Structures are given as structure tokens and as C-alpha cells.
Image (cartoon, rainbow, N blue to C red):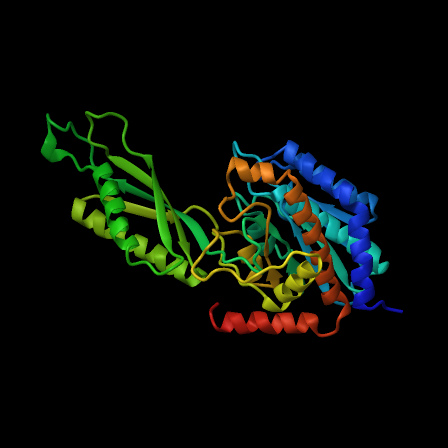
Length: 397
């Protein structure tokens, strides 16, 4: 006989409480041994060890990524829920984005839900997703079909706000290279075609462009090559530009605008130019408010009220966007420090190993597990989530 959601919620709460110290030790161990994108071997060993000991079927090296994994349980006859975990760290800053808490919460949600339900009618996946900070593991996993058949992809992220969903923009990187002609700047000044001057002109042009970009869009660039000596007119100069757009369509428009600007600069300076996207890119995040509403309700029941994001505020980009445009997904934020702070700082890294981080991780684990229970136990929940995704896709949001 299937249990009710109320019974499941109560059991999940008890399971998370019973595992609280175990989960916190996992979070702290990840925090003590930070690993960069695609190098998270210790993290994967730690997490998959817990899943294997709990009886989950674990698949390693998913989609050709040595630090991606899937832990699976359930009979497959019903909805499919995926709990997503991140565990890569930042160069020189460790877990200054709190991915150690994301991993521990996903682990806790999966273990607690499986034991609370005793038998999963459907499929419960815990998906280890490497390299969110650079490389986009979820992009590769999505393209490999890992999320095909998933009805709900669930994760949380620590932050400085407690928001029901994440205003995350689309982003990609574009490399622009100008080619001119080398010459001595005084001995043969008329023969030189200055590629670096063209690149500098592109930066100036983009600064003007930036003043008329729509909300959520921006361009930020660096010079990656600008010549080798001051007494040689540079024959080649290159820049790397990070572009963001409120939506994936807005990002595509901005890339096209950058290309037009680069071509115009090349024409006016006598250079030639090549542009190329150098990353697969992150799509914008499409919140599924059917699921995020359920999560917010469970989070509030755990004593952590959430609110809607502030209009016009964007919190960067993430490869969860590529998942969210294909299957119903959530990515709420739970604060581990005050709104005056910021992630990607030493202070945030410290908070990710502090008591407020511990409380946020446990509340999120319980809310994630309860939301997954809603999808698995309540008829029509998955269908409503899919209908909402299709509505947002049709509206271009």
C-alpha cells in the first residue's frame, strides 16, 4: 500500500535529522579537499561510496566524464526524479560557491527519500555533475541524453538570498582574433597594419554598445595576445569575451552583434578578423514554478521562508540552464550569509563550512526530498510540471 505524502514528509524529516552529522561530515570533507573542474575524483569516491553502501546502483564515467556519476534506485514504473549534485571548487578560493553544500544536500535528499518511501514506485536518480564553474558538465550530460525521461531535475544553491528560483542568464565565450601586418613603427611606419589597435578599437566599440544593451545582457573582455615587442607593429592580436543574455535568444543576438562590430572594426582598420565561440555555452535558466512552489512550501515548513527574486537582479549563469530548457527543473537559493555579502569570496567559502551553511544544507535536503516525494507520490504533479515547461518555452521565457 502506497504511503501518503504527509507520512512521507514526516519520515523524510526524521531521516534527514538522523543523518545530519553524516551529511555535515561529507560537506566538511569536500570543503577541506577542494578539487577543480573535471578533477573531482576524491569527491566522486566519497559520494558514490555512500550511495553504494546504501544499495543504490551506481554508474561511473557517465557520458565519457570520469567525474560524473548516476546513482539509481526504484522500480522504474512511474515518474522519474533526478537530484543534482555539484562538487567542483574555484581556483585559489576553494568552495567559495558552496558546492560542498549542494553535494551534501543532494546526497541527504536521495538517501532520506529512498529510506522514507521504503519502495520507490518510479525512478530516483542522484546525478553527480562536474565542472559547473568551468567546463559545463551538465551541458555534456544533457547532450548525452542523461536527462531524457526525467520528469523533475532538482537542486539548490547556497547564496546570500533565499529566493524561490534563480535569475540565471545565458552565457558563452567568444574568441576574436585580428590579423594585420608587422612592421617597424618608425623605420617603416606606413607598411604596418596594427592588429592590436584593431582589438583596442573593438573594446571601445563594445563599451559604446554596452550602454544600449537590454537588462541581463553584457560583454566583458580580456586581451589574450597583443604582440611580443614594443618596436614591432603587432601582426596578430586576440581577445576573449564573455557574453551574457537574459535569455538564450538574447545571447545569440549579442553574439551576432559582437561579430558585426568586429567585422566593422576590421574593415575600418585594414585588418582581417576571425570570431569563434570557444565554449558550448550555458542556456538561461527556465524555472518550473510548479516544482519551485512545492520546494518553497517545504522549505518554509522547515523554518526557512523564501521570496521571489528582486526584479532586474541577475545572479550569473549556470549549466543547470541547459537542463531546465529540456526538463522541468528548479534551482532555488538558500542564504548562508547576509545579503551584503557575495559568493566567490573568501568570506563565502568560510560560510560554506559554518553553522549557517550547515542549517541551510539540512533544510534544503529535506525540502528537496519532499519535493521529489510530491512528484513520485502525487498523481498529476509531473504532468503539471511538463505543461508549465511547455508554456514557458512557447512564450520564449
